[in-house]
Length: 263
Image 1: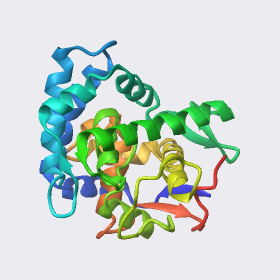
Image 2 (image 1 turned 120 degrees about the vertical axis):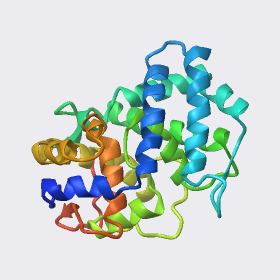
Image 3 (image 1 turned 30 degrees about the horizontal axis):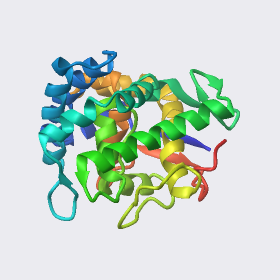
């Protein structure tokens, strides 16, 4: 089982070009602020305040508070949440595991090309879910789905695509069974199928990033967002979003119902 880039470099460039320019601009605003925040220990008001402001603004631009999406809490609460030392430590840990460092070796999830121990994987999974639940509960009002906590994790850490409707459809069209559903509730952990999909996908995509780096980097270099060469999680977010309605570029081969059953 392998995730392949089945499009040409020119198609990758076009997909990035056809992605809404405002969304590219939003990501460019938040990620440098998030990186400054993650680089501090502990974080200071100097990095917390601007990140809280821009993160809240972008989550609103990306649909929070609209239609059936959860409402955002106020800016002061964003400042308090991002200033929480425990959450900051959790987000730092995720930031130290970029998608480019993840992979699959011998059918097992791997860090930096080496099969990970059970303890390492348990820690990764629990850390990711702690971040999702903390952000979901403390930045939003009555959030129940994965979408907006995953968008927050993407914006802060760059780790992996967020499972909004378009990305889920793109995954389904790419052969990832069980992704195209009306609602994707936030699981409590990674013990069941929907939780495993969240924690296994970044490793499959990390292997894909490594396997198809030349083509991906060429396409990104000829796109309107060449800086994404340093943001593989966001690259797959964009490509999967686009393939919800356009050509399939990211494909799981062979199509396997239990694609998330990885050690």
